Image 1: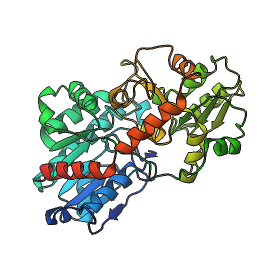
Image 2: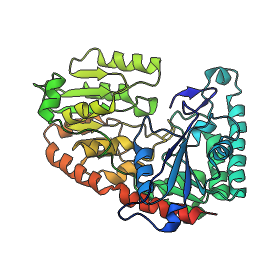
Image 3: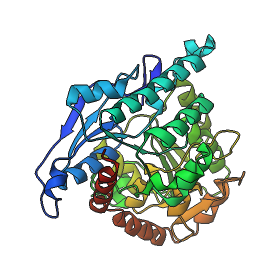
Amino acid sequence: MPACGFVYCVSTDAIGRTQGRPSGDAGSAADEELEVLVAPDYRDSNPYQEQLATGLTKRGATVSTASGSGYLFPFSRMALRGGRPDVFHLHFFAPYMIVGDDRLRRLRIGWLVTAVLGVSLLLDLAVLRLCGVGTVWTAHDLTNHERRYVRTETAVKRVAVRFLLDRVVVHCETAGEEVRETLGLADTAGKFRVIPHGHFLDSYPDDLTQAEARDRLDLEDAGTVFAFFGWIRPYKNVPRLVEQFKRLEDPRARLLVVGQARSADLERRVRAACADDDRVHATLEFVPDEEVQLYMNAADAVVLPFRTEEDGGRSLLTSGSVILAMGFHNAVVAPAVGCVGDLLDSDRGVPYPPDAHDQPYRAMRSLLGADLDGMGARNYQLAVSLDWNSIARRTLQTYRNAER
């Protein structure tokens, strides 16, 4: 999400509302009265919130998705604008407290501003609870991916989970264990609820064959096509992926690097890495929804070499990119960390150990002669099982348990 002011925050200040009468297996009359406020609003860059809100609406809930300015007491101000909700559902702490302005960092006061905003965030959650609002946090990541002011972020989350959050949602058991271990809160397991990350099968068009997609990308003579797809950020290790791919000796192998870099410096590094191997095709720009299938269907395997080393700062718990790839019948290469490790096995791709320093080269090499069609078919079936209807039902129950 883009920088806004001096903290990382969403780029708009609005409330979007999804309402509807329940249909089919909708919910009880009590469900119809449930008002949910969700923040921050990142629907423009990821279908997750939209899919979840649609599922909740079908079951009778009213969902408002809000974007705050990122300054003091954003949650209370959101709630006042939209009317007091029954439940406040927070997806990320970082947009409301992590300083993103390099000027403040150079002045060495970024930590102080982050600490002040963190305390404000905690007071804000306390105000919501005093007003009778249930509080829920989905822990998508251990910390912010840029690893800025991690000790402060961890301290704020520790206080929030211990005293101010009614429920914590994680996408797998492993994630719950890692969050509790990181925060030093082993005795809070009763607050945690495991609800899987849903699929993206209904979020993007998917009517191109692999041959058609490759034809449009001038890849007709390609053999195995690997792809990286998504926002290019430092923790995703894209320059390293390119260097690892270039070690492959197969002249027909191809690597697609597709996505928008989060900084000009990172874009320069990626372009430099791609420049001296014509088997690497870089599309470093935002990809509209209707063109996602062009790259995903052209690929045989999606490679996501997330940062895993502890001192370098592993932050990842789950990955929508993995689930997106599975929904397009792709094998997946990724480190076996958090929920990624729970999703992947050797029948679906190559989940490699976090401390394997010569990965993903070995993983890609092992896939050159593998049954990629079979892996992709198994991944697709797994994606189908991550049904938003079931996820919405379980989320609604979590909200009910969090109501005050």
